[in-house]
Image (tube, rainbow, N blue to C red; front, side, top):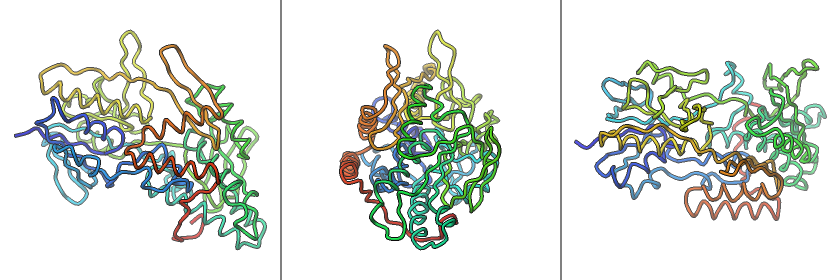
Length: 436
């Protein structure tokens, strides 16, 4: 029988692994890709959907369409809830059973509220299209509610937007919220001035964009301040409710009354990591990621590989100490290709190769004409910010989008927004009141 490869998850890692399992060395392999959704999502631009800059189809592509020409790939929509490493089966939530000879787990990550999952109801995170739609709904309905509110204190709370977490997602969200208030919405309301809205970025560490050099971190903070964003660093959140959040700084305890809070502070591995640990006895790190071997396989189970945000992987460069792989899309893509290559090597009876990560650097956009770029090159790091960095960020993201139509639509939407300040994807449904 033809070898059966099961790939769980079709994010960046799962997609690259499936694509690599075609052509030479894989023509006689059957691949099944199973995902909870029917689409592959370009997560780096998900915040653009949450802030009404792009529509969902611009950054999402149907998985079946992506593999329509790869005849050895079968696509299934379903959620894996159990894995039997001995029987080599995976059980779906609806009771379906999938058999495999080789398993690649690329289930990704989810939000982490650091043990306070009850905060999720008051401060949604941003990982899926549903999350983006919910954030967009809360932001736009907050302005609508403020237009109807007569009480000044309640109106101020409705126009206070808070982003918790100063990583790339938090910085991008905070900067875009400020642009919406100051450039997109003025002139559309009669009882409020949207420019009076306040945007606060709350970060527990001493600076934003911790993964970047301190100089770029400071430059990002300055660009956020220029947009009108209040940046509070060294501020640890201690409480969250429907009326606002509490946090502590070196100066003491403080509270912000807000009806629209977004969580961008923590990431945890998919719950499938615990399922895999129970099935194989593998070790999980503090974030719930699976500690893998150098070739990305699960210890004691060479037929199971874990990639992407679910893997606590290290980069093994000859002559250097192994270094942790950051949880970014280039890392997931490279792990997907490495997993597929090692699978082919095993089938040929050859030894597998350790994973080696190539660091291309970090990008983050703050707002219109503002971004920071930290690139790794053979000649050394290249760092710049401002308008040139924004242009670089823009074309880099368009380049990596999947499909010509997506690239064209994103460029068209961005060009229109640049010249008019309009954000076209502002349709929401009223499923509840802001803060609900």
